[in-house]
Amino acid sequence: MHISTENSDFFTDSTEQIESAVRTSREIWISGREKYPCLALLTNGANACVNYFGADEGDMWMSRSESTQSALFLAGGVEWEAPADAVISIDTALQCVREFCLTLTRPDCIKWQYGV
Image 1 (tube, rainbow, N blue to C red):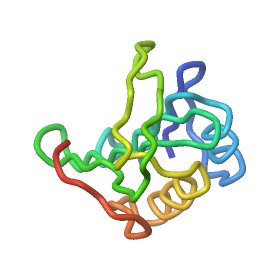
Image 2: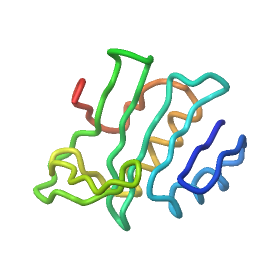
Image 3: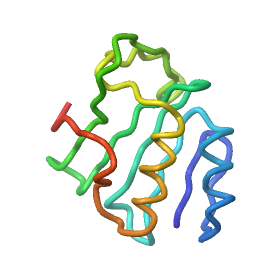
Image 4: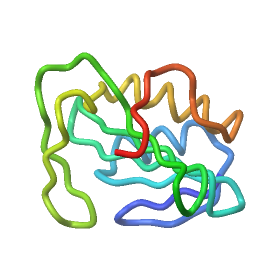
């Protein structure tokens, strides 16, 4: 898998390395050998927001939740407030990462909202 964070860019198939990168990074992109499909995660402590990009244009999905609390994230170094219905737990985000790494498809373990 190709892993890009705000501090590093590397290839690995190690689940432990990928999960460590997710837990220690504020912004992470995960893809296979090609640029798409990919997962883009924003994390802040126990909170995460996950985006799935199936292609360069038009196939974009954002995590959907029942949360009632918005959360602040850094996206490209800029503070961004994710809407409450997009905020999921870091553990749920890691489930998405595991599934994506196995299938390179949009994970089924969460609900998604299209094109947000």
